[in-house]
Each structure stands twice: as structure tokens, then as C-alpha cells.
Length: 159
Ligand code: RP5
Image (cartoon, rainbow, N blue to C red; front, top):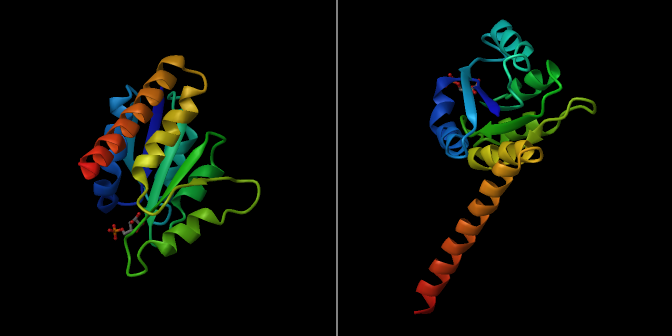
């Protein structure tokens, strides 16, 4: 199981690090790359064109500002692409959200919330879990742990 995380700038990494950690916790191998659709387009193409051969099954692509990276990544591959809009400008991430979510028909990108790195990792894991029962069980455990945490907080408030 392998997921690639590609981001437009190293300044995006603090938002994305929890996603990489979550994937590692699930036992999913990750490839991490900084490459920009605008500043290093050839690098993006090279990375994505070879992704399938390297065993990558899902690509998470994150960018801020006029965030074309996830769409460009999706244009080079039929692997599922999960886009994360990053809050990197005075527009608070709305610029990136709209750039990523409004893809033309034919080239889909599964768009997460602004800075939604955690859900991107979980969604990638859910895609992989369709054909991996062990990972599906880990996801079920994760849901249970989350529910138990909510119950604990609820019980504390009721005291
Ligand atoms: C985008 O521009 C990056 O994804 C980042 O979110 C934003 C700002 O990049 P830097 O100027 O910090 O490198 O390409």
C-alpha cells in the first residue's frame, strides 16, 4: 500500500504532516514531494507519470493560493487524487478551495476541507481498504476509538 503526498511548497508541510503521520500509523507507506504546478511543472509531470509504476495507489495533492496542483496532477494519471486546499493567503484558503473543487467534467479531484489533511489521509486509507481487510479493520477501530473519546467527554460534562 502506498500513498503519495505532493505539495506546492514546503510552507504547506506543517498542515500536511498530520496526514503523513496518520498514514504511517495505519501502516501505509508514503512518498512525500514538494513540487509546484507553476514553479516546477516538469517535476510534477515526472513524479505523477511514474507514480503507478512505483506502486502508488492514491495521490494526495495540496496547495494554497491559485491552487492548480491537484487538478494538474489528476490530468496526468487515472489514480484517485485527493485535493487539499491550503490556507496560505489573505483569502483564507477560499482561493485554493475554489481552484481545486471546481474541476471540469472528466478530470475529478476529491476535494477536502480547507487544511483538511487528516480527512485526506483517512479518505486515502478508505480507498485502499476496499481491497485490504486488515486496513478496513484498522479504520473500524479508529472510528470506535473516536466514538469512545466523544463518550468520555460527554460523561465528563455530565458529572
Ligand atoms: C502554493 O503557494 C503553495 O502550495 C503554497 O500554499 C503557496 C505559497 O507558497 P510559498 O510562497 O510559501 O512557497 O503554490
